Image 1: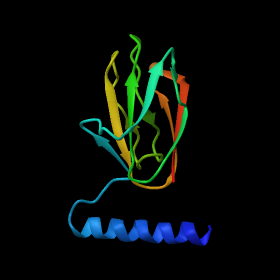
Image 2: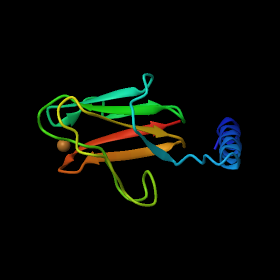
Image 3: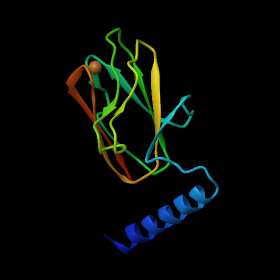
Image 4: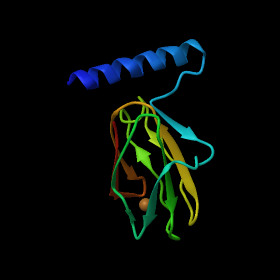
Length: 124
Ligand SMILES: [Cu+2]
């Protein structure tokens, strides 16, 4: 761990402690009701995530949008996004699902009915 990473981790920990103190503790991955305009978009089409690996910063949001008729979702197995699994809702064509990533790490995911569809969110 570099000094910078350590400093960042400390800053993140401090920010989280402050957030917790105000009563709005942020989960590692928060599912959002609406897609933020500045979210990084991952389109789903032809049985794949078009950008299977994305790198974002802690606090950034990601929106997955299904572009085809075949329903898809975003599924993090237990221990990845939280202690329990995080299974996104199935998306019909044109539908989106968004989540905010609050902690650095690598978050692998797949599509529940199509486990060969895999993607990764790297949070710095
Ligand atoms: Cu799928």
